[in-house]
Image (cartoon, rainbow, N blue to C red; front, side, top):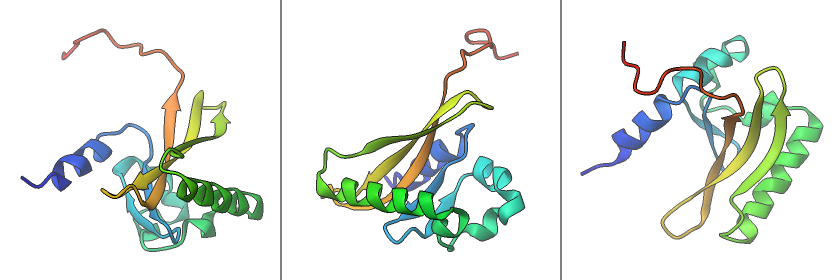
Length: 124
């Protein structure tokens, strides 16, 4: 069974933006939330372009250093990069690895600090 469609579905169901990049910083995939969130910068047309085009010099240097760190050890997989106070969430850069533990890319992970306000198992 091909798992690709299942993995894509997991990413597409995220309520936060997910932008996947290869090791050359090329945007290879954006989930629907990311396409919507970054619409003013081009949305879906950003796929195939360099993520670095969307960042200032300081961020470009930081992204490069993190990617180098990811490549140094298979245990280097997650770096805290910022806090978004407007949305009360932490942001991390996460390594993507192949079956041989080699870095094939990265993505930015958003983790909300807010407690869930919905009722458990509420399907109404």
